[in-house]
Length: 359
Length: 211
Image (cartoon, rainbow over all chains, first blue to last red):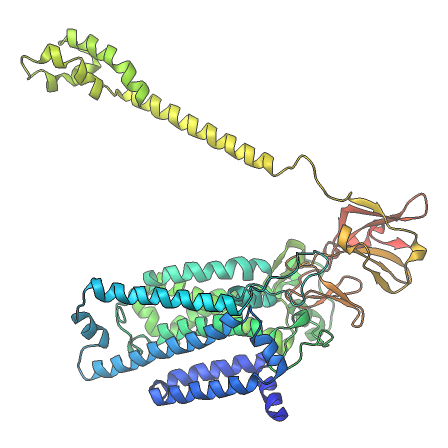
């Protein structure tokens, strides 16, 4: 049992966990026909229930999972998993139907009509009652996680955002506040609003499909499942005192020592690679980082347009393609920055602390 | 618009008595003229309905707009005034913090964290005052004596005893406040003067009390 716990602790080290979740995500999409079989899903759910049940015997796991704040996150993980699976299963069935030259499930369903009263209202009424009952039971069983009055000298350790903001809080560990708190969240909202304009492809409208929208579905699910849900999971279950990482079964030790001396790219470049001192002129000092950033944002899109995304570029035209690729690269910058921090202790690519501007 | 209706009947009645008058109101005439017998009867009431002149409309709109701008301006001014309270329950920005001999060498004094938001550090050479606001997003870090560092519980930024940032996302060192010796030999701390390392201000003699 102890070795099992140690294996889980090792696997839930965020570096491993993020790689693992990307691998699982890729495997799930590559072997989509296998994973959308009900028997596979039931087996997976059963294994999760067994794992969860056994883990409850561990006091550290129990402490985190049973905390009133964290109960909805456990539910969310279950619900996200189920609904993603359900959508992908319908997509696979539709793809098979369309291959056979038949109508999609959704089109068949829309042919059948029912009355709003009583059929729809009846279901809605039932849903309302069940939700109310659920909320009442929940509020009776678990007390609201209220804390002592705020005290500026005693910051809770760790100090956590509400669960739905934990992904943002995790982003803030890798970025300057103006990027992680303003630019990237803004781009998430604006970018999602812009999707129908740069992607006018009508395929997949009103029905689930995987084969017709592989890139769109993969990109969205990567952003949602890996960069949002997984980061919430990490923030909830793996971030402990002093914002250090802790394994699922690890004790939240306030005195856990983790050496993380972070270094800016300018120091890597000038001090470590060139064996010199950092130039005093801030612009010259940050030149390597500025070049890397500019290359990522301005050089990479045309290269991608000529190579990997040649087909997209031809279909979308320059404006739509560039908007799409900009949003795509901004999204990809988060896992890249996380990997750089974890692997090389890289703090900022460009750091102008004098002007509160850091990338 | 109500102002408009009060003014217009006079103008309309005048115009109805002289049907052929070549005035601006004559433009509207043709509508009324074809009605034979009702001309004297309907004329006083009809212009009351249609008596919105171009000039009148614009002056009414202008008045309305001015009123709106005035009200908005007054609201904005009142809101701005509200941001500056009459009484501020803040401790004075400058305070005395005891004799230098009260401070142990190599220790971080947390006594003034609650009231003034500062740490006072004494080392071999002298003393300096650090702000308790994390330079990343403004949380209050904790002093971890065992690890000899300030560690922020929000995003994991870490600062050395000197205030220099070395781990986590904090982009710059903690800020220092002015420190000097008062006439009575006590340490005098002035929070109205900030010293930022990244701007080279820590070299300022006021940021460090040499002992």
